Image 1 (cartoon, rainbow, N blue to C red):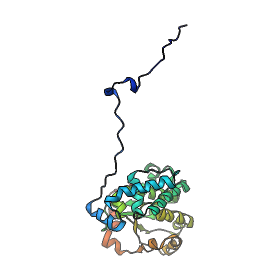
Image 2 (image 1 turned 30 degrees about the vertical axis):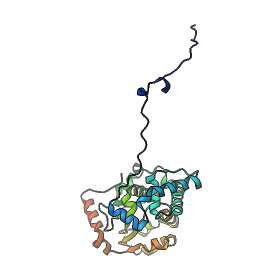
Image 3 (image 1 turned 180 degrees about the horizontal axis):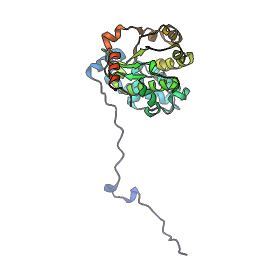
Length: 282
């Protein structure tokens, strides 16, 4: 049996390497770089009280508040991420912090919607045409999210899958600083929606969805345009309205003319589908 050497075994270490042999330090994460045009910088200043010269100071203030008041909150503290919440609450620190807390609370409280939230998990919804981001913005620069409940077949998957697809799409849209400033428009086309299908959107679902959109997601909803509303829409809206804040309720518009004058989306969308084209979030 061989004897072990009395000499201590060593492995190469930084101390044993020359200065030229040391591995380079890992690169620092890139800092925030504003991608807004001058026009949008001006709009953000006027509408959101965002001052470019104070922007990073404001982000740091929110970051400090999170660390002090919510030390156990598991959240990103990146500049770009926190900036979404400041913009959504017009740079009011307290309201931005509450929105951030609500954002994470909502995700924890509805795991059926937010767990495993990725495009491959909702591919059937994205392929159905239930949800489409139109290829152009409205005159104010708002992206248009078109929802078509007639494309949903309840026997194929539950309504929560539609809601998952909506939130996944919103997460994708809100990555754009342009969207953070301009906001979005929701276009709901109720053509062909039956009473039995509408019944799936009951008070529990309505309260959850509206609560998140109003108080738990950093996005500006500038308008909700309802077109081709069936007779039952008054019943649907009666379910929704108790949960709407006055400002949001006032942004619901039943307006066919909006399509012709501002968007022309449904004709464009139908044409694209006839040619086998459909926009999806990936």
